[in-house]
Length: 297
Picture 1 (spheres, rainbow, N blue to C red):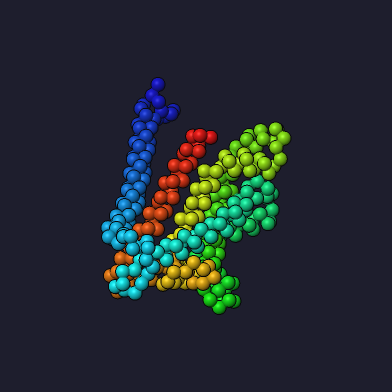
Picture 2 (spheres, rainbow, N blue to C red):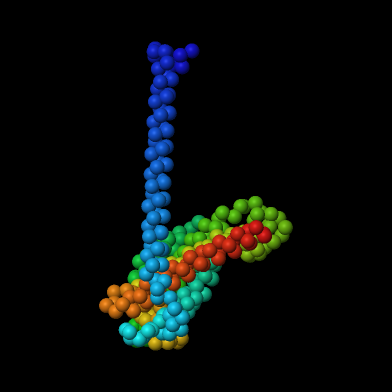
């Protein structure tokens, strides 16, 4: 047998098949090479950013950075008030946004039927994922800042919570949809009510993904600057009052990065290093926790 069709020269089919296989191997190698090159570019860019932060930020690390508030240039000030302000505003935003986003995601995944209301909620959530944060800041400014006539840490937390919610909604819905239907059916067969199935079966099975979504939301809002410029503004002094202007690391970085004073520029680099390190540590801790709970569950 020649391997070709009727009317073809002997061996033509094999030659055509060999050329096709060669083209496929070439295409595979090209695609693999492009993928490896793209991965290398991303890794080099990430390493460059981290290396720059380490080189520029490490010289500014000291005890006074965490113990002293910001002061006039040359006074040896730190970022204590900005660190505390960021922790308070981000923590309050997480406290507001986590239950709202979690319950909304559970509703969309477990309770909602296809309909106009569900489509609207899902569309608004997806739209908020890509909404410019400065628009959220302007909205909260008009809703909470302008009526009372002053900036506040509370309004900054609300702005961050609005950015926080859609990330939790999307990840919660997606993770719950990945839970096998057989797990739900087994729980229903044992007579468990729906709320208990959702709480003790679905959410428990999806807890790692849901927690990762909450972490992603924290990582997103912890570095936001534009919403805070319109809401909490910033404060050079100690302020633990959520009803007054409050300092934050992103705003401090924004204000000091372009400063003509070397000590303020150093504070900006060190503040950026602190934010990046905090987000990386959160990622590592959550991955360790997820691995241990997954292994133990």
